[in-house]
Image (cartoon, rainbow, N blue to C red; front, side, top):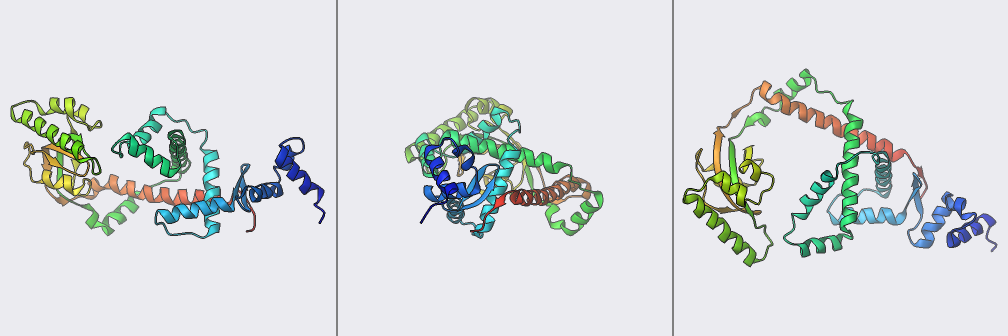
Length: 322
């Protein structure tokens, strides 16, 4: 069977990458042939010069399955890939401070006990640290773009706030609230027993120093491993049972104002806590609840606006029949 000239030209261009290939490989037919010859399967969509193939949809479906998500149909997966690519292009010019990306990277890194476990997790996910930073940069840029793009459409009027308050009284039954500070040493679950024992001995030595009269805030500044609070004397602000893990809240809820706890262990490590203030459970007024209600209403509107924008972005491509 004779191969048509333009297909032959495309195949030659794909192999040589020269001459007429500069324009030939941009044709949908050429992209489709490239996908088939490279094992990525049929071309399903073309957007911003990027082609999405059957193998890309298969990879997304496999990822959804691995994390237990409900599996969408293949067309929805391709639509999602297209939306993400369009969002990536639109958010590419968003300016980010380097520390923003590093902070997100550090939050991930510190969930692992040591460097070897971190490296193993990266290997299993098929990522390098540089690739991960790139993905985090994209996620932050995309979030900033979406916030700016939808901000002008958000409104939380007084009547809507009053209706929400009347219909959700149970949400504004404020539980007991506590303000406390803590001295923390990390020893998350999964660490070797000998390391956890070292941290147990360390927290006990710090408790002994407090018993002998050393200043709590100064000891926090010297020894606490909670970088977010050590410069503030370990202050955690106000919280209730729904904001803190039970293994942290329950020991603190038994303390009187001004009382310091003995060392106790949570899933993150060891703590010594001091209660600095407390408020009993009560029902909030509309005036008190208004900022929270308006935040909730704006979040709902933001989610709707983002979903509509993503739907529009998903349609901005050339699609091909499977």
